[in-house]
Length: 233
Image (cartoon, rainbow, N blue to C red; front, top):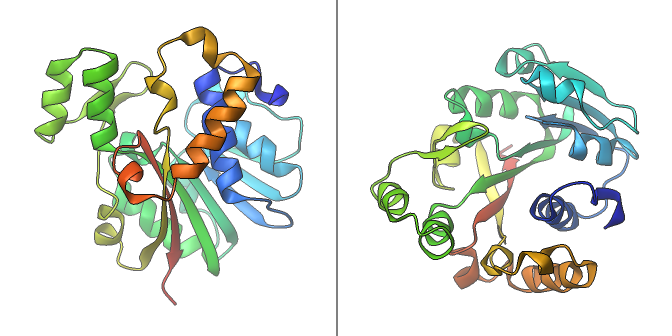
């Protein structure tokens, strides 16, 4: 895990886990939508052709770029400029919660995705977030608001507009969820922050997370869900 050791442990673990869930990817054309500082775009650019789209100029200016990839600054407007059926894989991690034009974004994803391609979408899981608020943060007001269906709040990105996994298919019936994997089921519950920095602990935690990522009972309480989405032909 040394390549990501400058990131906070939770962020590094998150990226390693989703990369492991996706497996080895080579010689594909990939879109990273909402690419942030480009950690994932940079990772996949080593063996693939990658286009990254990010609205924050600050993030773009400080992005990881050891490997060559195309960086665009913008949002849905940039999606509309891309040709149809041009990507094998679309990556969209922790993005739609902060977007108000989710249906437009998904419509564009369906348009630019190749018929045999897939979307890797990571999203907050409301039950896991409620558990986090109650158990870890003692924030009962926020937990009750989430149970009432209200938006959450992120200090960095603003309002978190939670949605259910099934909303993806409601917003765009052309897209179908083919796999749902749980993420961050356990590790945030460990309150000894020193453990999080230990490489041995991180490896054991990742192994444990992978053991339960596809077990329904654990997926229901995971803090995040990783959806694999394909287009109906």
